[in-house]
Image 1 (cartoon, helix red, strand yellow):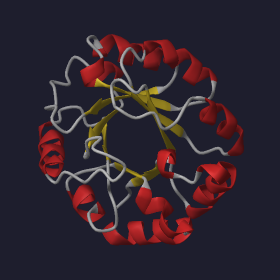
Image 2 (cartoon, one colour):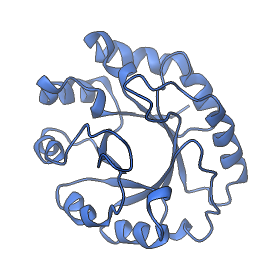
Image 3 (tube, helix red, strand yellow):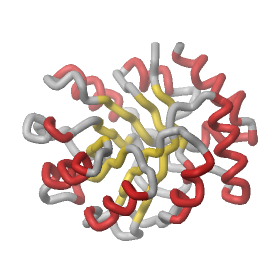
Image 4 (cartoon, helix red, strand yellow):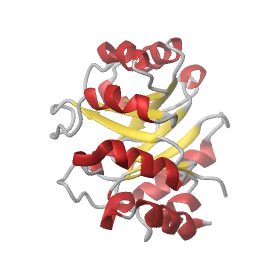
Length: 216
């Protein structure tokens, strides 16, 4: 089964990000995930945009940016200019999500819609022309060690079963590890975003190998 693995740089050791990126590429991950927060939509601010500009020349891996912010439109053009490949925005933060998704695709990028755990999956028909992927959050920002919410698995299953647009990819993000990744994949995830599980014990290659082995 081909499921994409996307490490979240918010969990990476900041003192050696360049070397970490090289290790991730050698370990065979599929893309690099960046959470950009505003401290308002979510009560944290981990990464800024400078990290994207600094790391982009270090790898050919796709860069995926998850904008956890209100009014994300102002940043889209800059992200495209800096070499990002895909951007997801939050349904809860966009009164006119079709317009924002269209803006992302007009920049030549893949557009995604992220949903918090409590947010039902909306009707995707009117978004489908500009929608490449759905991101289901499987945690809430309760602290650094945000626990996985098992109910999101059923949300993934029902979303995929009801899907009438097969080209849309489904992503799950939040406290995924070797103990639950098989359930996440079985629920229908095409891609998983992983943080602590990738970087624990400073052994990226072994962690990636174990994670893949847990569902393959």
